[in-house]
Amino acid sequence: MSQTEAAPAVEKVDGRVERTAATRRKILDVTRELILVGTIDPTAREIADMAGITTRTLFRHFPDMDALHRSFIEDTDANASLVMDEPFPKGTSEQERDQWQQLLEVVIDRRVRVYESLLPLYISTIWSRYRAAASDSIQRQGIARRRRRLKEILPDGILEDAILFEALDGVLSIEYWTSLRRDQRLSVARATRVVRVAVEKLTALE
Image (cartoon, rainbow, N blue to C red; front, side):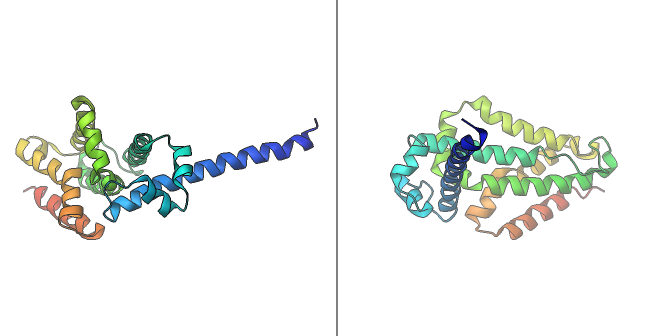
């Protein structure tokens, strides 16, 4: 068979792979959208209807709802990790403590983006079930990473005050962000402003 004859078959396979990936992406995006509008544990029917597919098609991509939930958690976590692992802007250094306020602004910006990405997961029953099944050590790894990142940029004047550090860590936690967005129903802009003002007040060193 010539290369010319083989080309259409390759294109057909590639197109099928792209459509499969696009449908999976659509299902995960719709799951997120449904949770954000208040459906904290969307059913297969609700997801399929909003995605414009049948439940049969949904279950071709995900064998069952547990598989969909696992993929949703993994996808959300992967997107959050991409933001958290972004390098600091050029001209700043984690070792240059005189720039800690500039770095803290970068940290706040990243956490807002990460937490907003994670928000649908945290307000859903999907996350509640996952946390119940996950080991305590796995959950603590994320907390330890968050605290370590904060300690890397703060000046000694703050690090030496254990109570002040805990207050800052609390204000910059996803739990606080979830409270602002879900419980107090603040917009992203308003919640961000609350976090910034709280951090400014806490870090106003004499």
